[in-house]
Image (cartoon, rainbow over all chains, first blue to last red; front, side, top):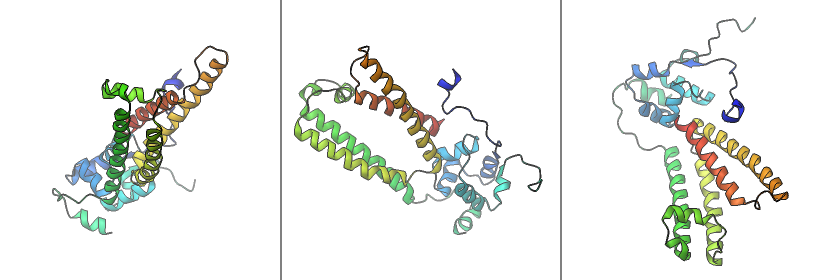
Amino acid sequence: MALLVEFPPHRPPLTAVENRLKVLRAMRNWSQAELADRLDVSRQAVNAIETGKYDPSLPLAFKLARLFDMPIEEIFDDGFEGSNHD
Amino acid sequence: MALKDQTMTDTGKPAKRPMSPRRKRYLTAIGLSLAIGGLIGIWKRAVNPAAQDTSPSVSGLLFLGDATLTTGFAIGASVLWAIGLAICIPLFHRSVDDHEERALLWAGLAAWYAFALAAPVWWLLHGASLAPPVDAMLLFTGSIIVNAVVYLWFKFR
């Protein structure tokens, strides 16, 4: 029954990605609209990223990293703490 | 790099920036679509006396009915719809950001599923005289409604 009412059907993500966008934006006293303007995306896109409802595309993540002058990993965190060489 | 230099030193209220080319294209595509839809609606209302006695919303529903249309309106509206959409659709899709693109993709898929579920069922039921003949415009309207609801949910939730 859940499948009939839930669209898209729930699919657990490989990893839950969190981000510091709201904090970084607040540190610069930018509104969501101002940040959206600087990224040339809609305000809804910024809000969706901040609230974790949407993970940005790689190009947009790079754009954010350049805007905040920090590596992508310092903005987005997938919780992975192991080694890539395990 | 220019973007970084421009923004990292500016922590105050930024000056009002000019509208980006992406946003201009976006608003142009939406405005053009609304103009085409409005024009077809007004034209239909003008050539259909029955529609003039009703409110615009009821007139809109009558538009999807099977009332006889004048040849001039049928050809003109078809050309406006086909050429107008052929111009607006690429303009719009070149302008959406990737958040909206995702909303559009899910909305399009949901609309297709709504159609794929409803159309064969209706056709089968009609084959056994359990339902009236399949109405393509009703299926189209249903798909569009599903599309709009899913799009708005993904875009504004």
